[in-house]
Length: 181
Image (cartoon, rainbow, N blue to C red):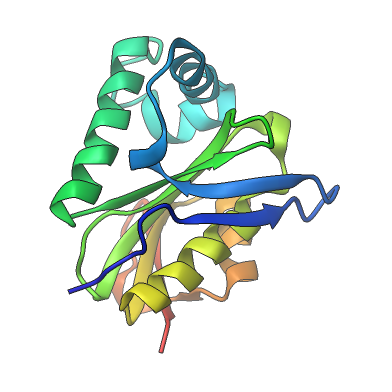
């Protein structure tokens, strides 16, 4: 069984400008009007929306109720020890990005992530911090799927040390893995 410490809050910095951020457990993020608005705004940014939500939402905008549902799902995952979502916050507590481990499988849980275009340079260090915390929690390896053409996502994974898993390549996406042991 994997186990993260309660109240996990990891300081990181943007690799582009040195600005300070924090990777925090989503079960410690209150679903305030401001936090929900931040999530909605990011998820409707053209790049995030295009890669993650356009197809799922049929071209409709990412709505506030979806943001509230995501935060609820994220907190439920921590309570059930089934999936582990992290918010990346700025120094004032505003959400600027998120990353997650989608299961408690210590031998190959999938990760995912998204970030605001207004905070470029934060995702590599956020994913790296999440991977280090996952190692300490008992994960032995992680994997990620990247749709073909998503160059920024590929760059994040390469900088963090994920390697292509060519045996799992699919028609529209590639698989990457990282051993944590």
